[in-house]
Image 1 (cartoon, rainbow, N blue to C red):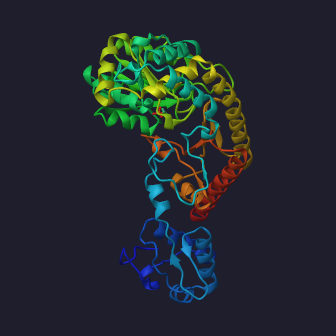
Image 2 (image 1 turned 45 degrees about the horizontal axis):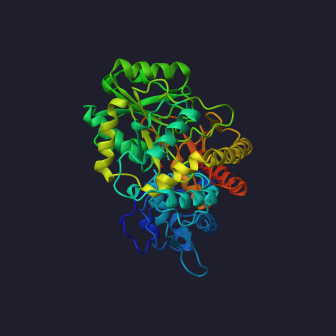
Length: 490
Ligand SMILES: Cc1ncc(COP(=O)(O)O)c(C=O)c1O
């Protein structure tokens, strides 16, 4: 199918469609016609609502039998691209929502604010924990207790770093569970790690550091938070041992003095930073008078082994450690923390003050209560078992449904990276899956340099039944795209 003469065609004639089947072997006319029309619709060349010529007219124009055209139209209708009605000409469906979602490919459930695809029933994108599992009763009790115990003074403008009771509870918790070495004076309570990154970026700016390394592949969202503060982003390669800072020594990497990393469970590959690389990273920071920003986003969930401790515990003077309750409780609570080297503590407090004075007192007091009562860790232990079951099921289903694919990374967290070497076009699979009511996200938006294809699948928020149906649809979408590709190649 060549370019139509108008981009905003209302009534399309067969000539205007300019479907060109020259050189296409007879047996593939239907498939080519279908693929060409699909491409025209997806690209917006045939816009929503446009009328197509009748099957009879198109068949005559192209010199095809009418049944070939009817079959192609039926396929496109079944996939949602065309709307057909007996006795009427086919029209292009309203696929605006699907196209918008695909154009905004950075659409993992984090950050919020991007509209879900209306027709999607199962969202396999990463970023959301099991929100139905929020321990509401315990949280409610903690909020009530906080309300009765908060002093009048604590309801006023307080220390921008947050309530001392919460900073003490977090410092103790991170020391016990994550091997971190934190004095509560050096902690700032923030509205999630997203805000922690804004504080960290401003700290970098004040230190005269205007660039930061980010993992490649990595989270497109966390690097954006730094970039939005004027920090230049330098990709640092990731392999199965985690981020490789020594590989970034050339070019812009040679001048780096800061890097943002996910050592406990690299996002999205799932690699755990190897002991040699951990040491190397700390040495690198010392050598360059630099800072490592450690994103400890889902370290609570490791299923095969005890999680490795934080890098911060190895070098509290060189590491800024960030975390939040977004994976353990719910992202909507917007509660997180940033532990900074003691020398930067006053600076961090003043940046938080400049941003929004302080985090909400009631929520802070409630979280302090949840942690000190032991209910926070009890909840994490309980939810860990459920997440492990889901992950095991995902691994099993991928092996069954997509034997040529590979689940990468250690047994941890709330997402898996599925390598799909046979997939050439991740966006096409996303669209095919969306047509089946399932939203998936390719590796593309996480990459800064080209590499093999894959999909980042979140499972933490889905039931067993949803995972079964979702992964079946995903596998079917991959299969359709592979078949289409081999037909084109043949
Ligand atoms: C890589 C990564 N870091 C951090 C976070 C947590 O962000 P926040 O604490 O702002 O909700 C997420 C959430 O999805 C994430 O994917």
